[in-house]
Structure formats: structure tokens, C-alpha cells
Image (tube, rainbow, N blue to C red; front, side, top):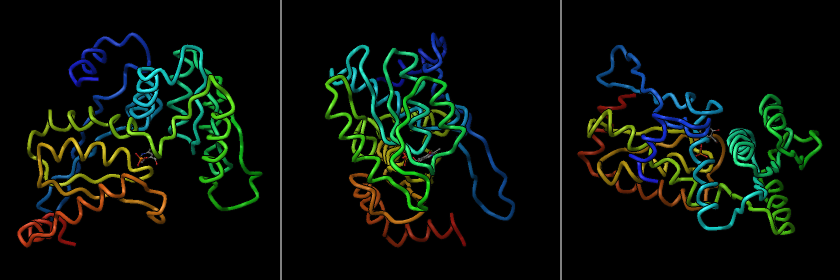
Length: 249
Ligand SMILES: Cc1ncc(COP(=O)(O)O)c(C=O)c1O
């Protein structure tokens, strides 16, 4: 969807899902640093987080390709936020939604998904401390394969995840123009950081991109390649000097 179209829809929202985006940008004072730090308050999105952007993007891509038909079923492995988005969109558009979850998911998020009509399927019994991401994905794939009306959104391997953040990049450029030196974000699937960075780097090739991630990089697939290529390109001396100035510690 074109950015202008997204903007027009948001200004006159006809339903909750159309209120996504145009989140505030807040300036943080950093005494002693020659740096301006801005926070994009993505908690202002529907369901209180940025993942709503990719949830609507994945659903609309599946509708456009015909993979998701009216009255069909969405299946996704989720630890909470993607599921909240998909549950909301499913309730609004008349789809069934099956969330494959484990006991590490936050109880409040699971309850909201259920209240929105989602079916929750647990892959574990809550006895283990390990994340069950692989088991969740395996089951999501199996369930979707067995039901001709089902579509597995497969957030870790769906290009509509990262393109869901195109508007976020344009929102930043609309306010800041070229006045951006670095973009910092959390990495789960990598979709938000890579999707935002890909658009921004088209206009600002010198932009530094930093991803912060708990644990190992093993579960990253295509986004990992993008993150690494961004890092390798940023090695000239002048860029390293600039980086030290921006991040003295
Ligand atoms: C609130 C929130 N922000 C950011 C992220 C990271 O998103 P991504 O999966 O696009 O890397 C996640 C998911 O891990 C999340 O739940």
C-alpha cells in the first residue's frame, strides 16, 4: 500500500485496524552527549505495539494473493504481540485465528487473544524453561497443511513482515528528513528493523543500523543477511570516527 493511501485512511479511520501508524516521536534529553535521541512511540499502535503493522501487512498480502479467502483461517506461532494483532484483524474481518503458543507467553496477552475469539493451542505443559519456538512453528505448519481453508502467516519467513514497516520509515523521514545518523531497534524476527532500514537506506546510504537481540542469531534467516551486509558496509575510517562521536562509550 502506498504511504499516502495509508495516511488518508488513518485520518478518517473506519475501523480499529486503520488507526495503525503515525505514532509520536519523542525527544530524550541526553546531558553530556552531543547526540539527539528520539523514541518512536510504537506503543500508540493498536494493541500497544509495533507488530500490528506487520500483522495487517501479512493478512493483506495473503488476501491479495488469494491464499487467505473470506471466512478462512489464519494460523501463526506467536509469543504474544503478533498474535494480538492477528486476533484483532481476524475478529474485524471475519477470519478464524489459531495461535500456537507456549507457556512463556504473557497471560494477559493470551487472555485478550481468547476474548477476541482466537483458538489457543499450547505446545508445552509449562514444565520446561526453554522456549518452544521450533515446536510451535512445526505445529503451525502441520495444522495449516491439514486444513484447506487455513493460511500460515509464517512471520519468520514472510516478506510481508518487513514490508509492513515501510510506512514507519516514511513517518521518520517525514519528520526528520535526512537528519538521521543511526537507527536502533530490537530484533525478534528482524522484520521491523530490516523493513525500516531498507527504506531508510535507500534515501540515506550512510545511516548506521543497530539491532539489539537477546540470545543467539541462529533463528534469523533472511534478515540476518541484511543486518550483516549493513555492518560490513560501515567500516570506512571516516564512518568509524563518526560512530565514535555518536556513541563515545
Ligand atoms: C513489542 C515488540 N517490539 C519489537 C519486536 C521485534 O520485532 P521483529 O520481530 O520485527 O524483529 C518484537 C518481537 O520480537 C516485539 O514484540
